[in-house]
Length: 252
Image 1: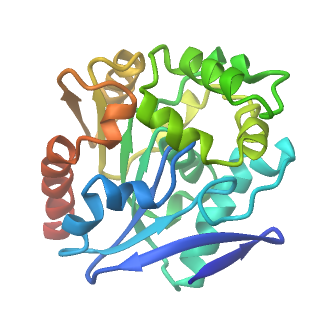
Image 2: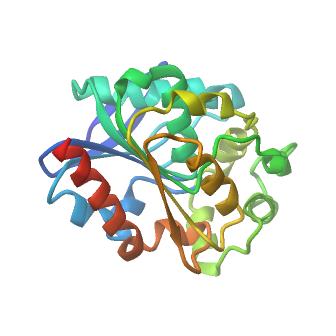
């Protein structure tokens, strides 16, 4: 079971398939297994070497209870630790939600390591909704989930609530208290091919679409009727544009 060392902690990742390298970074409260569970890995590994990581605080990676462990720069370093462990110089990066936020971190701190960007339900603008987690220590699952529903501006299903409760909520509450300051100054630096997608029932839809329009080599896919959580569950909607985008990069 592979782990990459990063700042004295372990970052778990899985590798499957063969072909050009494609790194998958899940969203908050999720894990690398979500890509497999919702049907992404099975399809993508037929064409790419898929590297699915567990972000710090999630899955099988270490779970510190210190907010300072979860800075955007450190999350970027965690991704780079996995790439270095696999001796990958440049990668196609696909991140959803939290993974998209880390994608912007890659633009800021390691743009030269990106071949292309696929960002789902993530924008670079300030997001004060995460202030809902201020003062929470994760010991009460009900208040944690209520805060998360406030951030998302949508209700979380009973099934997803069960999945969230299986996490180390003290670690995730610490991670959630990292501020989400604006990174829109990075938009002029995103000159690599970029695909963005978002459900039109997701509160972030307008912001994701708006920033896409400012990028010279970006396209936007709107997922009809899809909520924030639904964006990672709807592989049948997401995979076709993702595969088309990646195939276009391979052709140059």
